[in-house]
Image (cartoon, rainbow, N blue to C red; front, side, top):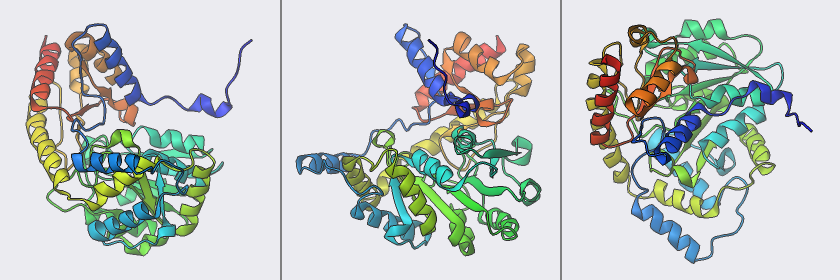
Amino acid sequence: MSLSVSKRMTRVKPSPTGAVLALATELKAAGRDIISLGTGEPDFDTPQAIKDAAISAIQSGATKYTPVDGTAALKAAIARKFERDNGLSYAAEQIVVSCGAKQALYNLCQGLLGPGDEAIIPSPYWVSYPDMVLLAGAEPVIIEAGLDEDFKITPRQLRNAITDKTRLLFLNSPSNPTGVSYSEAELQALGDVLAEHDDIVIASDDIYEHIHWGNEPFVTFAGACPSFASRTVVINGVSKAYAMTGWRIGYAAGPQELISAMKTVQSQSTSNPCSISQIAAQAALDGPQSVVSEMVTAYKARHDFLIPELNKIPGFECRTGEGTFYAFPRVLDALQNLNLKTDADLASYLVAEADVAVVPGSAFGAEGYLRLSFACSLETLAEALARIKRAVTA
């Protein structure tokens, strides 16, 4: 007897970054000395004060269900964060806490999109955006912006992509996978186009907000274009900035009717996020932020080492970033030098010949690139680069 899955699943693929992590783990278990530059996870431990808050929560018995959309205390801390960091004001009913920012984005797609709708996604994009749109029954519309376009879409590109079916625009800044940030002026220029289409919702994915070192300060779309408050959903979380990936706490804030729809979706899937993790997240948001700046200083040092070294590798061309812990070199010349066809071929070659795992750019909608995570020590980075250079120049 063979079982068939739903038709929608034939259009959706597993996460490529998860596949890289699984391959690296498998090869390590087999005895290979694999350096994995594939996963988007801080190498730092969760700060002790945050862990202490969680331990205290367990000991005090905070182990029961919470409201579906998060505790009142955490939502109040999130509101304070938005006011403090972004100059944005949200009431409790405009905030929903989810099992990671990923679930918040998924809930938004489920609550907003349906068959016949379109969602615009700038490329390179985070791997899950298109599949979230497909799972909602809608169609992803990709706008390509490669290295020559500075990895940023232009107002003209956005205007040309909009149709009467467009319901959602994803904006991720600083960007996974490129590390590029939009300036306030660039966001406002996109806002000028969106002002002509008042039925389009903007999903502002700010998960890397605090891992930022650009010449201009970080600004969220809702801050750059305050008149769009009634149709902007700001998504964020504690995973990246506070090294809390496994705690699974993300959140979103925006117009009440959309947040209410997202809450309903969540109520029929996961229900509330982990009660202990919510208390830890509150401690992170309300506690000293110096722990974040210390980690960002380390990321910036790694970035400043990595980018020039990548540009020394034959066939690699890499732009400096303004944030995140990723580099996204173009490797078209390297493919030609090695007589390889695709970036996936190069990623496989580097695992086989250099014992270094990276993610092909095609997973992010950008063929001919690689994504390297520098969420690892400088010593590990130096060894990985030496291996890659030997394999590419062999």
